[in-house]
Image (cartoon, rainbow, N blue to C red; front, side, top):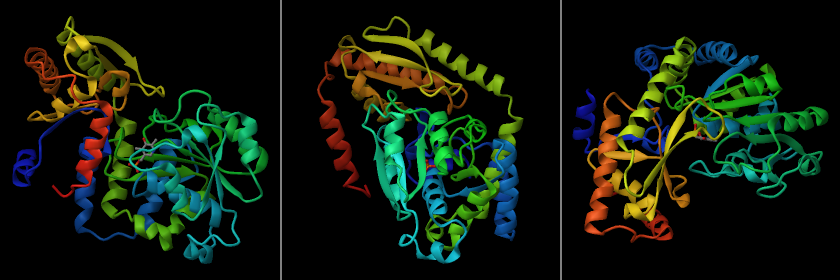
Length: 398
Ligand SMILES: *Cc1c(COP(=O)(O)O)cnc(C)c1O
């Protein structure tokens, strides 16, 4: 089945992805090795215990951890990691969750880490039966706030590394790990969108969690890396709450193949290709009324630069109107719109196919020019836009 067949046969909008890895539009372009591996295993039987052991080896070699396991996604990885911290390898306790009677069942998280990646991170904790204990306040969490949040019932500290977190006033991972070490409490790190596969384990994190379907270009899956004992306890959750977060053979093998492909990838060449796309946009959108351009380094230090388009009133439409009108084009052009409140959209080069950068630039020019000419911009407030998005959800399936 070709790409064309899928979109027309199932009446799906064609999408050009200049937004990065967004799970709502299918995350990322899966690398050929992961597609081939996932397809090849479909007609075979394997021992899932063995396959996950091989995944453990692949994750260990990619992350420097003792062991690893593949899960349904990062959110599932956090739930299973929290469950593992509470039950260890006690199978009876694993079957009892989310009833945590007799277990340490509190998870400390910095207030500024209580993000929403499509669902609240606190819910990923609570699904395991654990209680969320927030440390500090949204934009200020000192080490003493974390220490004060720890009690004899603390099972783990969950640390989120992401541009979604509050970026100021949080306690850095190294300090959190030092607190965890001093008190004998494992630190679980949500690294879902981060490229740094080795950093958290090298720093002493008990578990580090990644999405296979984001920068790695793997199938929809999650990766947990960590100590042998705690990773085993994560895997054993499949006899309990992990059952509702099942990952299949194609997901596990596809993730192994994606990790292998990542280790062989020419990262410098990829970076140069992405930089060339951003440079093209800088030229194609230069000196355009109402729009100012700047290159923007990744918020958490991932090796990718994006183009920031600050949309002034001279453009004749708000930044969010530009994002929505681009998304209504055919093909739809998706741009990063999570910071439109600041009057800006971002163009991300990571998931474009050859030539699509031109379609993106052309669509932006045409959309802004149309708004300036017909005066049909600057009309929907941001709060109305958000209400409309929620109302549309309540209308699903449509
Ligand atoms: C994407 C993301 C998640 C969710 O990852 P899934 O693998 O899609 O469940 C969790 N945390 C952060 C920081 C993310 O960016």
